[in-house]
View 1: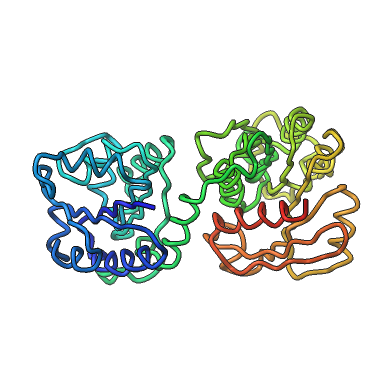
View 2: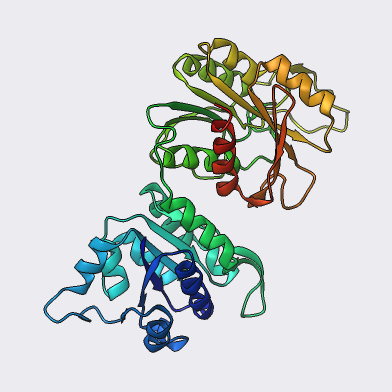
Length: 393
């Protein structure tokens, strides 16, 4: 595959050298384009020596005289990868500004765009960067979240350039689009639910919706039509999916049951509240010095009811957020919900639980067979899950 690697003026620019070499080891052709600011950290000659390809900087660079490089490169590319991406470059990409070679290439290309931000944590959480993130992801761009840790300025937070192997794996995921799920509809429940206590308060949980969003992206990359019934989650869902927003467990149950008859796959990854207040207050409960008792009622089993409404032959996969692993409990859930398989997710670990960027599961099938995944990004894990399930056809 042919990859344009755009390098902008972050301290992490030097790590793009290792990224270029690793992408080449995976068999890709890499052409590098630097912003003017990136040259404060790395040089065109360095990347030309590493890749054996011309390196572009100026908008009017023409390695082949008489050929417009920004058009030729853009049309030949299978992926435009901007790594590292600074706040300035992200803002330009989001708003269609084409004032240097890199942004001009991005505007001229119809290839997938993938960005890997790297910057100071305060900059990364700034309104402008968050707005650019939303715009780019709504257009279908792949956004790889930076790591959390110590950054070059000495501060600690989210803004570090991710490990090279993580970026390469995500690139492979983007480039490995397939038709394995072509013609099939995948119905996914995602995120938390919110159960009102009064007009101002509700019961909920820590689910970010990241795993559900990853499953939606994976299914889309494999050619499926994707429907997501989503609680109020923070993770952004792919714009290509059909999104049905809900708030409560009962609303989620109703929408999942409604959509289930048309689904070939049902994946229940939502963290549905087990209980809801019996009598939510229509106003606001006022604080007092007296104890407050809250009566709770059990919520419906959303996934079980959706599976019951589905047509015969529908594949159903559930997620079990567990602390530890009790085989009898898992077997009971498989039987009770009539699932094809269940993904056992240990939520006690900092790197595999709620809100994490990575995850690790054990996939158990109805016949008792178990397959354990490695710890990987949620995006990679989502693809792994579908492939494992398909291998059981």
